[in-house]
Image (cartoon, rainbow, N blue to C red; front, side, top):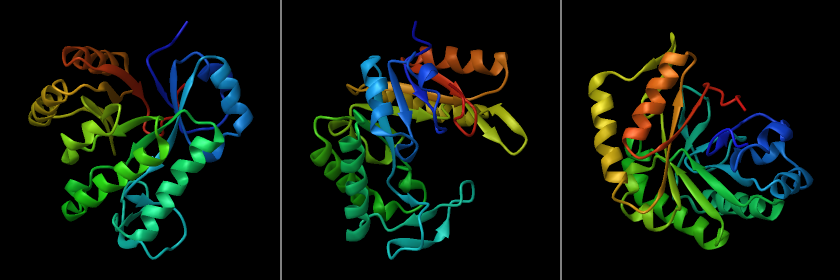
Length: 230
């Protein structure tokens, strides 16, 4: 019996547990084609992780000097031709490896480099062109709406109700919850699969996130900061 609508798992292995989900998001480097075939044979739709505006690789000409303070990856110039080629190549490789689709992450450039929003939208379109008819699931990317809704199949609202902080897991303050609610109401007008991905470590906070997601027409997944739960 399925545990939930989707599992975001950034570790490796756990094939037996992953097979209980209809859809899973995985790190492509951690899985061999035979393992993806096994999951497909169990009826699991696998989505490969793809970062579109941050790079954790070695120094490269598309990288900016600034880095993500939480994870250490370098922010990139999204429109750099070599970065576009690199990311589209990763997308094609993941599909060739056996993934059924892609999870597009680090789409919030409107908060850091708003001038890159048009470039990011072009990059998402290029990925769609190469990966068609693969399933595309976008993480946030609200600065590209409504245009992005014509390209992807679903949207994840990461940290919709609950978040991780330096002190642990907690709900967002009231003003942030209200702002997120306004975005969620806009998402409901679009023909997309909607998923809330929240972070919690207690039954009370988990229940809060699950109930609030349902109020806004979203399925909810609750995990830890490292996305290490299956």
